[in-house]
Length: 551
Image 1 (tube, helix red, strand yellow):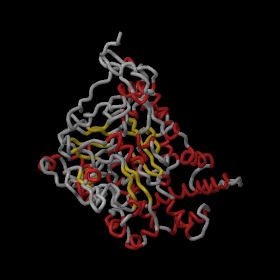
Image 2: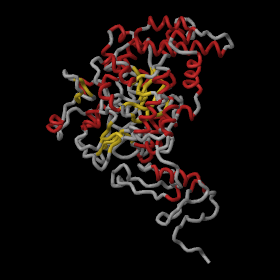
Image 3: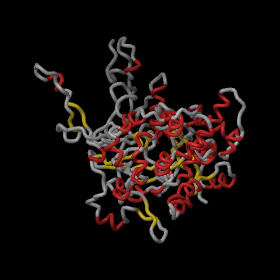
Image 4: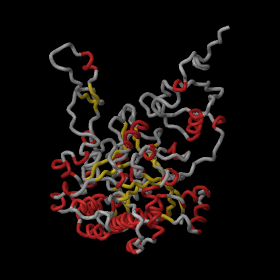
């Protein structure tokens, strides 16, 4: 047993309201620059729908992820080294800009410069890639709220696997939102697909990153990722992807998407897993067994043998304690309500989802029945096969019994807590019917509904606290024309402007500069003035560095 640590995320889909705040804040933090106009590290899809890029789940078309061969070995669905060598200069298995969308802006100058006329001027859309006028035909969320569903939903790859009856009754049945980021898989096919070795998985926390210096723009990683969460920057010629906001994670802060989530639906925590069993878990013959196999390699952080193995592997006691308090492990293992997205891709994804109970509750309430009654909910779960089959296609490779078990636990929790909230006697048989104790049921309710910031985000720091003043901010190797690090500080101090990929040391120093009363300067970097803190009176010290004081 080789114990390793992995940062994992769990999302409660019942709490997602489709506001896209996570997408916008991630966009502003990471991909608000030339070459990444179409890139969304975080996006929110309406389900059922085609997703972003369109039909990314159809691996018969895109050839992403792993496949088990006749000898029981895992092979890249897109082909091995020889196949990649033959197609290294021409990779046909790539989404086009039409599968994503052509980003656009509007000709705002026409609104102010148009000559006086009878009609109001119009700001027509212009492509951000070519600069030419264009017609808007698709976007990252074109099918939001089932918009245009009769034409669009038919292209949903998951829906194509279920019966015609489900497709006909779809619009009267259910709809939910699915936020997506990079899965930071335990068995990442993007890393295995990269010919230059630029993709790598960090040993300490399992975050999958791209070494920009080694990337040669082959784009095999884009083809290899079944979730299509690796993007190509057409300005720099490099691959980019979600970094799980590693500069924040390293100092114990949650990701930007988690920090700004309106519904508080995201949970971040550390899980321990057996590295030696990852390939075994990903190679089970039946796709429907992948969920249980993946769950089995996650280790109990309270087990003395696991603790000893973690210490032997160099994992500190602070990290072991964080794994013991991890909300991700509790939701996956203790309460068993979180499921992986498309385990049949065999990448062992580490972003898990709590499936929504809302479609079932809405169906019961729509018929005039009590949507909180345990009998009504259990009966609806047996009768409403439509949402269950669809959810099973997303999270359990089609195994409906697992999804039904998760929804039963969520329904039992809702019914059990209603008695408590109304001051009635509790019904111990409700948690017993789903394999939980009353204490576990209440703890699950608290974690899902009432958890505070420090309960939802249990993130150990990567480095011991050091004095920020003693650290020098290193230069960024990506600070070249068009590169991800080409932007310097904005006009309003260190906190403004576009972000620069930074190390944990500079992140500590930056936080100190922004929160301290004085200026954290050193010999090579003179004090800087934050104009946001200036009251407008006189000239603050340091506004004109190098100038002599008047006599």
